Image (tube, rainbow, N blue to C red; front, side, top):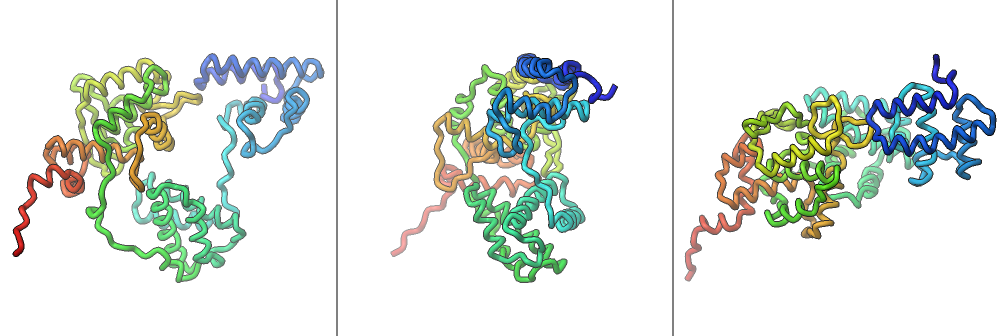
Length: 408
């Protein structure tokens, strides 16, 4: 029987079974069911047997005094009311839930979709990794959406002030993010200039200034700060157990965000107490020792906080539908605990997840761990890459400093 041929009560019962199947918690299902019971009661009074989206909108207006609006313009309370009706509508149409939360803003491009496809194809030919290509596509889409929002419909109409306007609209982001936007703009404008899609002058807007990476200073936090950060996490909660594990993997093993998300149960050797995986960035295999603290955090999360599922990834979402965890919210999570721990930063100091990796390397160096060992832990292909941390080991540098001869 087609979904639109079943009664409202049958449709609700089918939806509740589906929510249970895809991992919604019992308490959440009970809350949804309470809402639908009021809707069923309303339909009985109206002597209506079959669901439609218009019926749902009418219920919201008459029962909740809420007029249906686009999801992207909703408050949280309004989203709560509309979401129940939309889920019922989706289940009627598709037999499943397509969109868990409020609909995200449409990122489809009206005028530049073909240009974007050409740019990504060009970057693909360079042999870039899928994760890099996805990041470039996401950022380039934001750039083109901005151009469309100010009335630009053709690449030939793009001017330097438009590119600078995009960067100004992102001025509140961190330095690292703004650098990423500028790098993308340089690459995108160079591609369009090469294909004669825009003025040649645009390709010269962001010239490459050669500054060797070894001239930069890595951001790091002391062991005391890291301890204070970890102690600020409430490990009695489900989310606390998960967040504690994530930050331990970053702080004690120096794992990158993408590798933390891709870590699987098969990567853990419980007998040898090691974690072995192929790094996403370098393609190099590393095997890292698991400390007792990390071992207990892994066990605690897997036994007491990880939802039951068939996924092999260690980290999965706590909210339904259950799926492998994504690292997009790692930065916000980290900032929350920095704030809770009352840890402050110096001006322009980087304080993202990568600072945990830098902190591990810097603190190992202060403990006089040899550079090759640190390089192995971080999975650096060359020890020269690890050498960047030497410059912030002031105590170590003082020990090898040469005496400056007196000048007379």
